[in-house]
Amino acid sequence: MDRSLISVIVPVYNCARYLAAAIESALAQTWTPIQIIVINDGSRDASADVARSFGSSLIYAFQDHAGAGAARNHGVKLARGDYLAFLDADDLWRRDKLALQMSALASRPELNAVFGHVEQFLSPDLSYKQAASMDCPAGAAPARLPGTMLIATAAFKNVGWFSSELRVGEFVEWYARAVELGIKDEIIADVVLRRRIHATNSGVLQRDARSDYVRIVKAAIDRRRKRVKEIAS
Image (cartoon, rainbow, N blue to C red; front, side):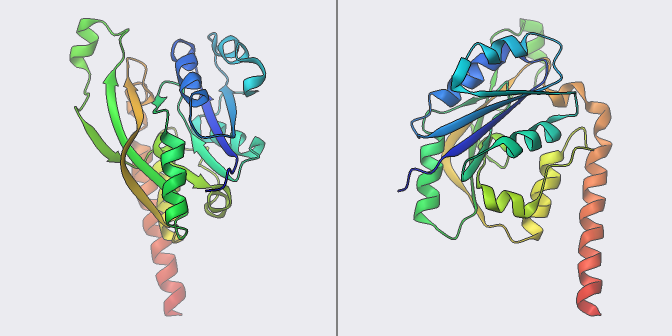
């Protein structure tokens, strides 16, 4: 297996309390070399201080608040790796996440991307009352999420940028376009991501933005109809 550089992009927005653990889980990867890029999406907390405390072990950049999609796009623009991986600032990777996925890509050269399983956990800082109100499914489950994906940089750029207009669901929209373009991927059986459930998860805070999912579905249907008309003509 070659030793291609993997660029790891970590968007952060007001998530200082969890950011260090996320970065450490990236630094602990058994795969080398990696390039870690933290994009501060206009945080008003101590996220900048946390990221900068890691010094030269990562690249740090700031942008005005524009959402996770825009932050990931910013990171891709700074990336030098042949492969891209994305880690949310409140989640954790298994130490062999990247190594497992690179092995899968090496064994199946036709693949453009590899996903894995996710295991969710209640953040230890939750109060008993908060924890009781959270939905945290037990066990591991296959998942196509930013944090479970490893993708060839060329394949990502072929699909295009994440939407910076959607407040939620920007990865769902991106993956729909990837499928339409014939990107080949698989989900390995290993747990690669531990997803933290806490009081300030974006899905909890942005429930009023669920209409974005309707926009995603409509856009996909419109693209499909356009292709059918082009083929028919």
